[in-house]
Length: 309
Image (cartoon, rainbow, N blue to C red; front, side):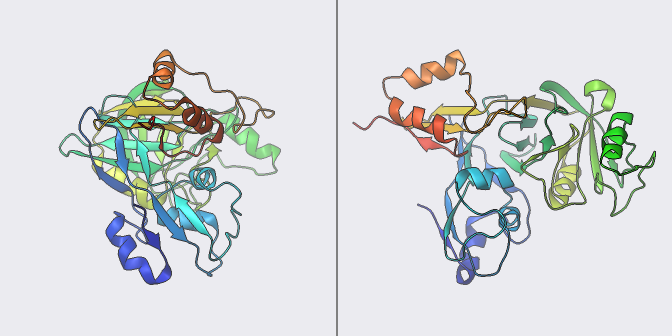
């Protein structure tokens, strides 16, 4: 059952969510190993306060594209007061080992599985833009740094120069640093890629970076404090997730795939399906009509596709 959230119902929403106004990551108890479904759907009635969709997304620790995919046609600059939004606050865990950090690029989410707790932390992220993609790889955390400086690469400085912006060789730590106040360095490519914060509120849940992974300031601070050096980091790109739950219900969750050229539309770009995904689609208890419609719609949250009996 979904919960209605209005201005008069903020107390209710605080009970349903790990965080709303505090803008922290949601924390979910891990389901059994044969289950991948976590969270629950939430409905939100837009108040007449003039806030853009990004602010509402941040309130629920959701990325901007996730909100737009879940609510097609919504005005991202000024959602209509009184309209009802779907908050994509439930999802299927990636089909990976539940350890360390797992990043699903198409999903624009980061999952952190602490070794000492039976929970998962879920954060929306910004990733590499077209032509400067975040790599798919298995790596690990090699260092952490608070108040980092930023040394733009030559390529980044050239890109900024083309827009009339002359970057210095080193950006000092502080509120004007695009890396924010915390950075977690990954081993891949000799430490080129980082998980870090940002000095801008816009861009989380979008392809905006030069290849690094961005988190909202409160999220990176929390993750920075929890993550130990040396833990594994698994970066995947899986727009389609699916699960047959212990009670027999079938779910599929479909995200827009990452485009590789300017001409590709992620909403209509064909999604190659793995052999396992095709087996799920053709399972006798999967409603193929609903499942294939979910692949077309790409709402970014789990859709039940169990055959009715």
